[in-house]
Image (tube, rainbow, N blue to C red; front, side):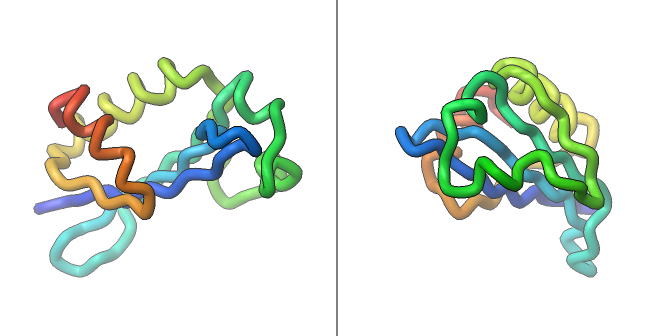
Length: 102
């Protein structure tokens, strides 16, 4: 089964990433298979347009962690799911792809 991951971010007023949502989907039927929602600490404490809703009740329990911990888990998740394609609204995440050689 071929899979891909789609990510979205929210940023602080100073343009730092404060949360990352990620959904793994089946490439054939486009159905979601797994998801992650990272809230980056301490970045989220700086505030931003959506900072007030980051910790609200959600279908997916947020993982509050450092940027380094989030990227480590993200890399592990991609590796375990044999993911080679990452799609994101924010093109800067190409840097993550190159850095971790997913």
